[in-house]
Length: 380
Image 1 (cartoon, rainbow, N blue to C red):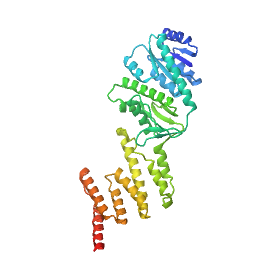
Image 2: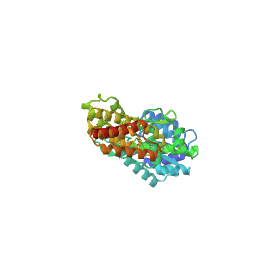
Image 3: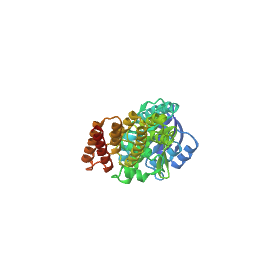
Image 4: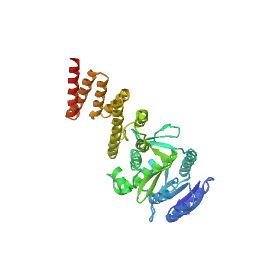
């Protein structure tokens, strides 16, 4: 493994260098006291790992790590620290590793063994990167090339929310660090919260790399964004397919039903993130629009089984929207199931009164009473 050492204390730097020199598989590219030199080297050549001191006067270890990640996203970082207890606690949970000064051989060997395993997994993952689908309907998960469902392995809820928020803003500009800190750690003071953010980003990058996903967490303009390579999002694909679907006709009803079935559940439906609510509601309305459009077409063309199926979906998944009930009642009229019309109207009336304290619309109520008056006259 190709290693770089950065520490502003020459004695500590030389001590780490001696410990690594005895390792047969470690090639020390440079041991530097100036972190700016590290940036220059990473710009010019590939590395596997950098051992970096956390507490340096000109450029701190966290800041240096971010700059190096921008140049080489698959670089592994091992932080070295003499104190900073809160940072130690954070990295113990989230980073590839950290080591405490003074560094001892047995502790460093554990770090190197861990690093060797990660590098081996990375090589396997890099050979097996395939087109994947990132799914946001119902829960955030992904499908591999053979359509096996894969779940993410989250170390903390904050890392999960960070990634989900970046996915949510995948089409927008970078999200500034200050905004992410306010979103995820609003109660913490800025210095500690900044460490938590860096740690979460580090852990996220590590997890994405181990799982073999071509998703980069890019740092630029004092913020973060995701960069996808061969990764497609189900929501984007769904809306694109609906926009470019063929003209609705009897022969394409099955195509539309298949597209509507892709909607497996509400956008990030299993999460409780308030910031996702607006997009969740927008997509619900998009689906409702297309459900009603196709159902109304089926009713008009006499495809009563298809119409009934789609109206029933509307009633079950949009229980406070009366158009699903109304559509089913029209199907019952055409199939002479008049008793079911009354049951459907009463179900709608009861639900609206119980949950919204309102009655069905005057238009629907008039249609309902007129229909029964007509039925009575026909039976006279």
